[in-house]
Amino acid sequence: MNQHMQIELLQELVDLHQAKSQFLDESWETVSVDRYLDHQTFEREQQRIFKRVPLIAAHGSELPDPGSFLTRKIGGKPLLLVRGKSGGVSAFLNVCRHRGARLVGEDSGCRHRFSCPYHAWTWDSAGDLVGVPHQQSGFPNLEREQFGLHRVGCSEHAGWIWVALSDTRDPDVAAHLGLIEGEFDGLGADGCEIFDATTRDIHCNWKILVEGGLEAYHFRVAHRKTIAPLFLDNLSSYRCVGRHIRSVLPRSTLGEMAETATESWDIRKHSNVLYSLFPSSQFLVQEDHFVWIQGTPLAPDRTRLRLATMIPTTANLPERQDYWRKHHALTLRTLDEDFSLGESIQQGLSSGANSRLNFGRFEGALARFNQFVDEAIAS
Ligand code: FES
Ligand SMILES: [Fe+2]
Image 1 (spheres, rainbow, N blue to C red):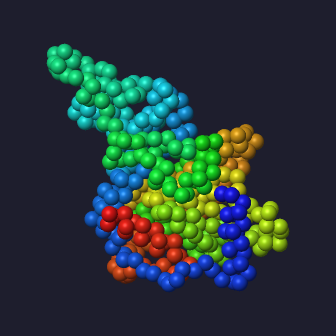
Image 2: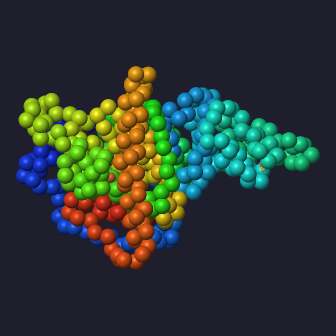
Image 3: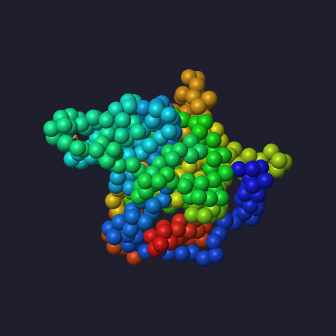
């Protein structure tokens, strides 16, 4: 983000802070509770969002070498991601073309041949069928080129591996990112690596988890034992950039910063910036690293969440291990507070106590996010 934009976003928050006000939408809004419970809505989201929109499947550093592979389940599809001999990444359905067994059982590894555990049909890292035991007698005239692994659109962009689940063509990531592309690329993800990653299966709808990042109204209450002292009470701003949302969550140092020359203002020092990429990737940018949070819906009331502490490769030094470990632990403790609230919300919604949820004027980003979901499933 350029300095001009940083100053503009910070000045807006300084003004609100000095006026003891908040970043307010025109009116407060409500959404129906059904959207978090209903199986049909969930299925429509899967078909019209998660199978259509380019999704982040991995960070490039998770496939470091030719032959590196990993398996993931995304949008209900079992995927095999492989870095080929020439360095490009391909995505395939992790399913044998003989009789459908799961081809690769491991989470990750490095090799150029993938042999099915059932009858050993074998494919190479380009997805080409290279071995069929007893082919001559069992499958005379079988044309191997007809039995390549089922390909899923995949491309590597700005340090991330993206997939398009309903397409064999590579996803147009630049078009998906739109005007936020430059800022997102500015995170420098291609020069980063995962310091540590934690995966949790959480018993709540995926949208509740996205919403949890989009307001600072809850900080003083829900995070009083962790990060509350680091932030100002109920102050944050947001902008929609296409269907993506950039939120700025100012730290309690904002007042001190306001006393200094604007040219020296640094948004990463005095606030957290959260990029919520549609539909369910969030990037919490801090002073010297960022946290990547990836939500994968499993059911209306269940979401797999993976959070990874991303650090510059050059900063992964032996003497800094403790420092990064502490950061990862604090993120985890803080987000666990959000996750347990998410689960309590899901239970509360199933009870039938509310027919609608309420988003205050300072929770406008939540209303916008839900509007983007509605537009996507209506299209
Ligand atoms: S099911 Fe895979 S080789 Fe038979
Ligand atoms: Fe939170």
